[in-house]
Image (cartoon, rainbow, N blue to C red):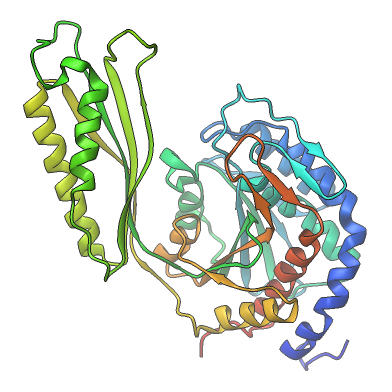
Length: 395
C-alpha cells in the first residue's frame, strides 16, 4: 500500500481497500464467534459485570496487549500500542445487559445467525473488542495511535454510564477520539445526543391504608392515574420532544390488591429547557398523586443527558459516512443516549456504530446475522484507520 510521508495510507487508499478487507475478515469467523459465544454465555446484568470483564481482560492478556487492568469502576482495559503512540483512540463497548442471572444465557449458533439473550446488546460489541487485536494482526494493520480497548461497566439503566464516566474523569491517558461499538444495527451512525431524563415512579400503599381513598383498588390504580396525567402533558413537535413509558410493574396475583407498583419512563427532547419543564411537571404530578391518594408516591431520577455532540459535517462523521458508502452500507443517523453522551460531556469527538443486523432486541431470543459482521468489522477498522491518519480531525 502506498504511504504518505508519515507512513500512513491516504483516506482514498483506506476507502479502496475496504472491500478486500471485508472479504479477508471472513477468515476470522471462528475467532469472532468463539469470543461471542463465550462472552454471551456469561450473565452480566448491570453492577454484576465482573465475570464477563474478567474473561475480556484474559483475552487481552492472551493477545499480548499492554496496560491490562480493571479500574475502580470495574471497567476492563488494555492498550494496543501504536507505532508512535502520540495519540489515544478509545474504543468502548458496554459489558452489561438487561438480563438477570436467572435467565438461561445459552447461545445458539446456526449457519446464518446466533441467538441468545443479549447477543446483540451488547455481547457482540464486547466480542469485537476481544477479537480486534487478532484481526489487526491478521490484516497486518499497525496503527500509529494507541488504541485503548475498554469493556465498560454500569452503562444501562441505573448504571447511568458511570463506568465510562469514571474512566474519562480519572484516566491519565488523554483521549483524542472515541468510537462506541454496539452489536446492532449495521448502518447506525450516532454523533450527537438529545436531552433526556430517565426515572421511576413508585407507589406503595401501607397495610393500614384507608381504603376509601383513590388507591382503594391498590397501587396499580395510582400508577394508572399517574400515567393518565403524564399522557396529558402537552409536548411540542419542535423542538422534538417525547415521553416514553417503558415498563409498568405491580401486584402478584388475580385477587389480591396490589400494595406496590412502579412505572419506568424516559422523557427526551432536543431542548434542555423542555426536559427541565417535563421534569418539573412530573414532580408536580407525583406530588399531586401523593396528596390525593394518601399513599407513598415517589419519583426517582436515574439518569440525565444534556443535548450536544458534533455536527453532520464534522470530518469524523463525514469520513465514517464515506466508509459506509464504500462498503454499500446505508447510514441510519440517529441521536444516542448511551456511551456517546459521556464523550460529549467531556468534549471528545466520538461516534457510535453498529456491527450487524439483528432482531428481537432485548428479548430472550434476540438474534443477529453472521454474514454482515464482516462488513461491520471492515467499517470499524476503516474508521479507526481514518481517525489514526488524522483525517477526522476538525480544522
